[in-house]
Image 1 (tube, rainbow, N blue to C red):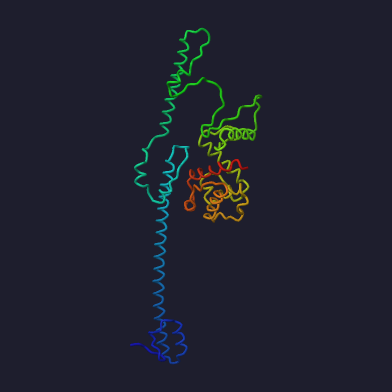
Image 2 (cartoon, rainbow, N blue to C red; image 1 turned 45 degrees about the horizontal axis):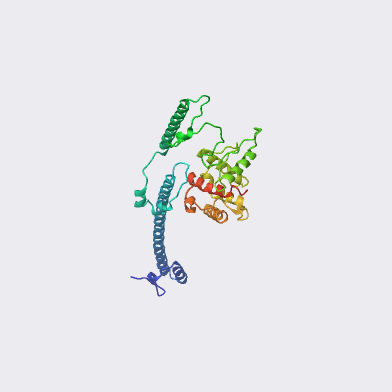
Length: 343
């Protein structure tokens, strides 16, 4: 049976405020007791509702965390697949090609799978090729000297290398001293001075830059501090790292020691492009914690000011605390090619 106090049905009241007002307006002890009982009942009902709502929010939160973890794992899987394809797109030291469709589609298309070349041991093939060429040159050289010895002409013998080279694919040339050639970028070292005087590192850099601009102005070359052209990928990597350090040395928030973690907050990219375009933005206002903003700013300014294609994706860089050094190295090479002559 519904209880009525002062003409009000207590079961119809669903607000604590209304019950407290009714309690203040009631003077009869029994009626006040009824109001208090209803108030305790309502408070218990509201407590149950709050507990259910909190439990529901906790479940939704757990589901959201699990979904984010699944999304992050999926993005990581796609990214690794994309970088793996990029690493296999050319032999070691060659230009890499990134296929973003692998990241977007989660897996290579059937056409890509069918067109994928068979796995090859490129190192072993290169070794075998060099061994064959060395044997071929040795055979032809012996044949040339043997033919000269049998010519019957008195005096010093001169082997005819041209006649032997016409029928072979591995040419033989006389042993002469010549300037070394860069195996990586095709730059030629400058000739030594006539008095054989040693040059300073700066002078060697200047001479090598002049030769590079003369022979191939559109293709950069890397030089070390000894004046020699780099021949291995490791030397090129070290030279590029030294170049980045020298251009960002005055920036307190930047310390470049590698091509991975040193670039994971975007500050190194910002410092590198700011060094060449100091009026493009205020570097001192940047915060290493605003990683997404830093990456977006650096990639955008590099593209707008220096025509450097954004080879890295902002979302990918934000997700990774330890970026793939090969991808960062490839992108930073674009900075060197576009900007190394700007200073």
